[in-house]
Image 1 (cartoon, rainbow, N blue to C red):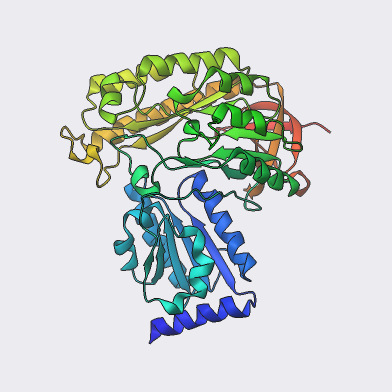
Image 2 (cartoon, rainbow, N blue to C red):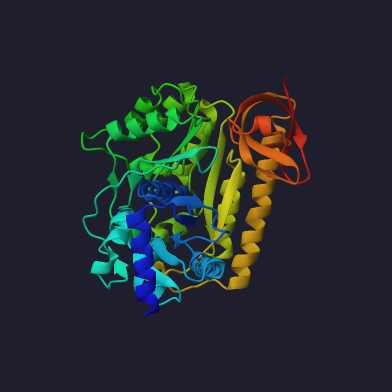
Length: 446
């Protein structure tokens, strides 16, 4: 009786279009943010009004990640939070965790609908027709998925524009191919159209995102290098950033485009995962340390003032002290600006989960700490190089402790006393020095 009542209420919302409230929560990557925003606009088109997740709402949509076990735990916490905010709300869970564990999620108290990869963008239709089905789980078939374009808008200072989805790489630690299917891409024409729409809304920075964007190849066999050349010609956009891209897919043409462009920022994020060729082999990565080193050095030599970040996985099965030392030595030998450090997290249905030579949690923790300390040093040294120079900064909309934050073209985080007139504006600033919190203090030119 309780469930039927909820379904009737949702049907009423959709049919009457009376401005019922929808709240959204996104876990995980930039790609998820682009998709959440797209779902949000779909619901607005049928009459819903977006509201904060911390406030009461009639429907909550939770877009999940499943890269680590913590993401799964966080999903459960967010569901509980939604029920606490609005006990009678309708709760929808989608995203990678929903694709991988639909039955498990459907049994969590309060969850009314679970949407897999095939149906995540069909929520308005499902809400309108939910009385015709008692199914709680929809769209978890992973084969032959269609490409669905998406981008974020009005949620943050920058927009995340999806150009590619899925992955064909067999990395032994990763569940993404299971959660998102095979690699597939948007057309360049549609990507350009979306970029122009984003620009028309006053957005100054677009982040190009996907699961494996370097693998981009559209129906006309145009590759990622050709895509960014076309994007570079879009009028009105001030900044592009390329999100994480595999080192073996970074061509000379991509480097040259970023080097010559006034719109593509001097900033790359290139996953390393390990500096040991033995571990890279066990991970089934498609490069070894020599290739990685050559790519990083080539970018640093050719792109002035470039910032280069890297992902590193710590404690992969078989990572001895010697193999970990290889990672430390390689990182120290490279012109990297920062690291994203991930303690290895065992995921079901991956080849790595069946491997022997598991690493003790305390060892993983100690190695993670070492790399975080190294990352802080790399970032501090990179920031210091630009002290007393003038740089362009795009300021964010959020403030904290009376300060407003932003990023330079080459991804140096800066702060200045809050001034509402600076929000979402691009300013020429003088970088002064790195503060104790690791953020650069600036003076703003009048």
